[in-house]
Structure formats: structure tokens, C-alpha cells
Image (tube, rainbow, N blue to C red; front, side, top):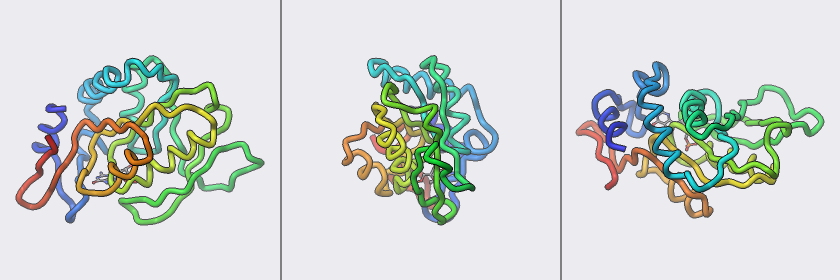
Length: 190
Ligand code: 5GP
């Protein structure tokens, strides 16, 4: 999506070799006009998939996912980063290794809100090594719901997550795919 790529070029800030900070429009301050355009694009791409639920992960996926859900007219469910143990099997859970913080945490969703009748579109802000998406995919599979695919704002295609998730047979639609980034600049996949 050209508008997103342009915004990354204008306002993205590199942190080290492989982290892109987009705090001015996506991860801290949020440009909801841009989110709406992103939502329309995913609504077009997944128009025939009868999506019943958007699933994302707290915290940074939630803002985007809400705007996307409005396009589809369905609820948003966000996986919570768990601080307590799975009580009496009331939740689906998975482990995720954080790319930006380097630690492992549990994510959970209540069994009340995800089940075999659902057709789920995953939404997240970034795809790097694919750990967050793998965790979300496990939650969907454990619930018996159907996974229609994943919508990602920014895929860092030089990292292994995109290939990994696609090799699992999951459709991944990334709106900006970064081929390379360095102090010389950022280039996108064709
Ligand atoms: P993965 O699990 O695919 O390795 O990483 C995805 C998660 O890590 C995303 O949910 C996002 O929050 C965070 N992340 C990964 N790479 C970046 C990055 O370059 N910039 C920012 N802002 N977040 C990132």
C-alpha cells in the first residue's frame, strides 16, 4: 500500500539494525485515517472469506484491529498477555517470545469468545520472526475456529516470519513489505 510505504519513509525511525519505530502514526500516536485505508484494503482482500472475528494481540495491534473490524462489521478479540495461570481451563493459551523485549510470555483468550463457528482474520502491526502470529494461530486452532489469514501492517521480509507462516499454509497479506533497511534507507519488496 503506497500510502503506508510513503509514511514509513517519511516518519519511520530505525533503532539498531532490525527495529523500525513508527511511534508517530502507528505504535504510540495513531493515524486513524491511515488505519481506515488499511482496513479497507484488507476488507477488499478478504472480501469472500466470511470473516466473523478479528483477533489481535495486546497492545499495539488493538488500535488497527478496531478500525479493521469496523470495515468487516465484526467484533475484535485481543489476546491478553497473561499474568495469572490458566484457571480451570477457561482460556486458550499459547507462549510467545517477544521480538522487541526478548522475553517469553503467555497469551490467552477466553473460550467464551472463540469457537468452531468462527472464521478468524488475524491482525498485527509488525511481522518479524513470526512468534506473535504463531501464538495467535495456536489459539485459533485450539478453539476449532477457521483461520482465514493474517493481515499485517509492516512485514520485515528480511526476517524469517513471513516465509515461516506462509509455509504453514496461512495466507499472509502485508500492506508494506520491507526488503532491506539500513542507515542508507529503507527499500520495499515489489
Ligand atoms: P514477531 O513475533 O513476528 O517476531 O514480532 C512481531 C511483534 O513484535 C509485533 O507484534 C510487534 O509488536 C513487535 N515488533 C517486531 N518487529 C518490530 C519493529 O521493527 N518495530 C516495532 N515497532 N515493533 C516490532
